[in-house]
Image: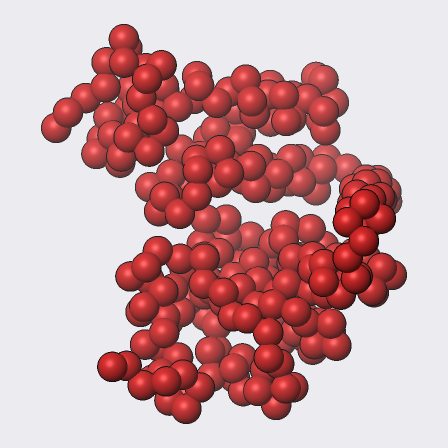
Length: 259
């Protein structure tokens, strides 16, 4: 097994270091840590009280260490790292702040998003329904509230909702509420967050058939609602092909037959 040396650190791509770590080279993780700690620290220090910044940054990298074996390379490591950092920042506030304080902070985030969306609409001149906001790691009610207020479309990510990124909301309840403005679906599987509402970070973009999504029921509801927007896989090619096979197996008439 090839190992990365200290002298190669600055010229080594993240994806190679990640593979080294998966192969058992702990020095590779140390290199990733040192490379990305300044960026993570800057993310955290703008959102967390100064006395807690270092602790939260370390919690983020502990989570990285645990989740990295499941990293599939579908995005840049820094892109993958950002929502994990956001989750740990949100967890800090869930653990340490009373409900009222958490609500006020989330409203501040929502206000910032509102102003950004208004700026995009004003500067581009596009119609409001041409702009979609996604069900990401943010409370579902606040996301939908923004969409309704600004008359935006919704990009519904099944994996995000299943694993709890959008809060304690049932996937099909959330879908019903989004249908009047549903513009796009990101179709992924993942484990349902369960009654304990445990967020399944790192498991939100699984191929269909690998989690708890009732694919047949979901497709049936889209069809009866007359949805004609795109269904998007954010998966590797082989995972997307396997997901298409799952769709053909449960609803053969939805997709053309394989050649």
